[in-house]
Length: 382
Image 1 (cartoon, rainbow, N blue to C red):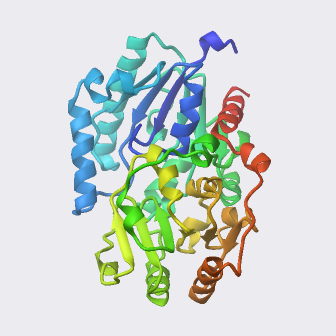
Image 2 (image 1 turned 30 degrees about the vertical axis):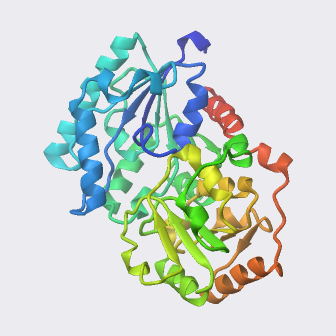
């Protein structure tokens, strides 16, 4: 396949909203190939809460804007265009057909505007099953990044049905974890199948610039978490370690999908609004220990946390729950399961009794997003 004939049509999360693995990969691919990125609506029914209302208004604003208004061209990589077709956050009955018609119309217009024919269609979302075949695509790639059917608030049966239909129409399957691979292989038939774990921007996290942030005023030692604050975190565990280590500062930085007001009764708990991705590496340097206190359930066990390798690249001690993808990085990650194990691990690291080794640079370099993007591209073209 000649490189002059290759282009990509990507259905995924909102470009620039948060740094997903798909965005990391296509920031590299777009340097050589034209990409049309389609912001899609989520598959969870909206809730009447501050977070969902804010996201809904942002989505609606993008839908009502013209293509040129949505994202300033100077903010986008060359070769990339981003569209936000009008969609209803509901995928059943008549609404599903309305969404399908709206997306297909908007995508065809953008492909025509850019003079792109027969793109490679890549999707991270099961609801893209409704659009396959409408664009004369060369092939279809399902980049399976999570077990969406087991996400909190998602309609499990509908998502499983969509995913099964998507896999049936897919030519290439790329999954991010061993457990996802096991599940998808049970549905897949003759498709090409690849495992590609998440990467990390090595240079950015190993060589952060300095930033000014209120966190520097917080007493040490500082135990830190950065990222989405949502149902997949184990709040019982979090509250336990905050209570047991009242002389340590626990700092959470990220978007509140679930309110953390109930933790503010603890004087050693601190919450800050999310910072832009380019500031995260500098923020990590201000912590003494980094934590990944996830729930242990069917949904999280299939996950490959993006922050895992970012934490490791920062050079700070890391503690995580025994998810399969986290355990792969022992002893560089201290794995703790019970609340008592967490309390002891934190105390031993702060006291110097436990000093987990830093991951060797040569081992982490292989995980850089530039290498992951090359692998991803080779899978798509295979």
